[in-house]
Image (cartoon, rainbow, N blue to C red; front, side):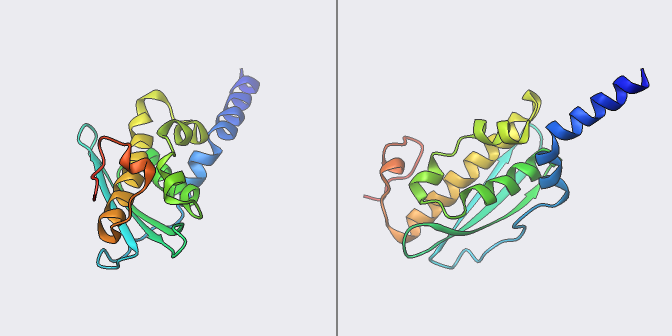
Length: 154
């Protein structure tokens, strides 16, 4: 029985190592000034559990996300999802970042079904941050224009 417990524990640690790493050592914690014209801020929350996520992105002159920071008040899965999202989108174009889906985050972090809303918060946060940046810069992105939930600045 002890051998089975050790094997299970090893499997558990291996499977959830990315989640635990991003929770124990979150990357890119912090925020940026919303007044900066090159910065977009996304603030989202999940009323059911009380998690709140603030994602800041800085966009360079080529339209790529050069920096991403987050502040999250919530469970370990929400913190890990935020941290992973900041690493994932750095260097992406805005259109590519808009294509990131919560299922990709959930799969990488091995989130259980009861924690899928945490990865959805991360997806919503990047969309919100890009929408904020777009409203400041008056740029129009093809992906945003085709999305019904996004403000169009035509």
